[in-house]
Length: 183
Image (tube, rainbow, N blue to C red):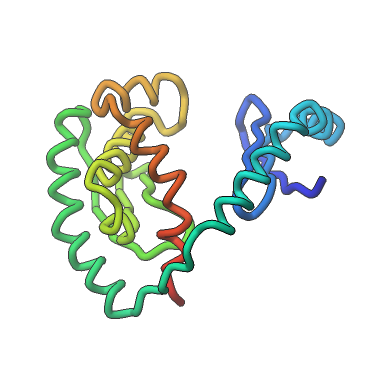
């Protein structure tokens, strides 16, 4: 089975199945034998996920790429809407933040820098408002926890109890939105 490995300071090995294939996220200390063993152990699950992705992609209607004018219009809208949502949720999370930047990205919905600067994808304007709010809360919670630990998700759920529902919407529909990005 073909796979790529992303190594980091994490403590455990994780397997991710995406439209690009199988990605293994592993600690620096993990050996190839450990990774291969985990892949063998989860072979059935991986093949099932790959088949589901293939079916999903085959059944997905081809989305029209956005023109540069449409991308600019989305970015302009995002510049008005997203800072208001951040301003609303920041006190609920109990954090401050730095600069807010709107980007047109192909791989990320949002990010939070160590300095507290927030970046958001203009394509969020094509998603339901609850999806936008879930991404805003997710990034603001990184101001408290710069990781995806249990403490981080406890904070996310405290502020946005329906996070799983809208995160699932983004996982199921986000690739189709990203596919519309041109350039």
